[in-house]
Amino acid sequence: GAGVSQSPSNKVTEKGKDVELRCDPISGHTALYWYRQSLGQGLEFLIYFQGNSAPDKSGLPSDRFSAERTGGSVSTLTIQRTQQEDSAVYLCASSSNRGWAYEQYFGPGTRLTVT
Amino acid sequence: AQSVTQLGSHVSVSEGALVLLRCNYSSSVPPYLFWYVQYPNQGLQLLLKYTTGATLVKGINGFEAEFKKSETSFHLTKPSAHMSDAAEYFCAVSDRSGSEKLVFGKGTKLTVNP
Image 1 (cartoon, rainbow over the protein chains, first blue to last red):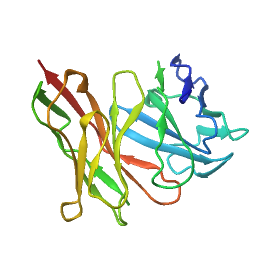
Image 2: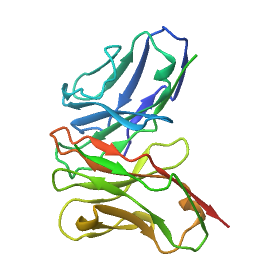
Image 3: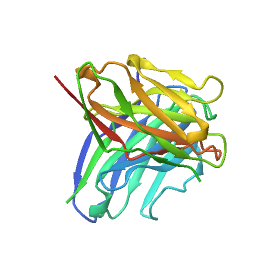
Image 4: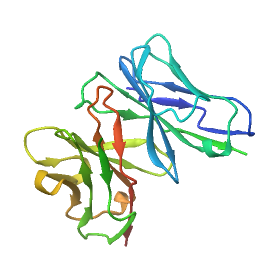
């Protein structure tokens, strides 16, 4: 079956512009995660959704970052007024249920470059 | 809070040699531990996981890892490296706080020489 998909695969934007990154999880997966992968910081958690609610937003680095999930499916991560330090690969993952033993399936990521 | 340390950001082995990638963790609760592999320009793929029970865990592609509580370690091994094993490997621990988010190590890039 289809895995986690993300779009766009690459995004180049100018400093100060807003960007939206999209994640389509595996059908039926209730849990959805956003992570950020950068050279300096490694892999960092950003936000967790269970259904359409986000009980854990503790990893969002600033109020320029926000995310939503609709219909228990697609999620959008929005970065406002992008800065150069936002350049990274943004990874989305989904999981079939809450529960620590459940595998998180990762998408291929969106590479964001802020110039 | 949970944390993960991977010793060695780069490891190089010859084809057919033993692969050993080191991972130590810190956790205030019994840990759930994971190893993921990332090939260039791809997402992460789960190799194996430890939750409870048997401490020697076997995963895909011939990899295995052993949970050693006394050493707070979860090292990844493979008896004989293959060229296709060249990738970056990440050890992770679940924070078990409710979100089940993963806390990752910095990663180890494995090079396999012919």
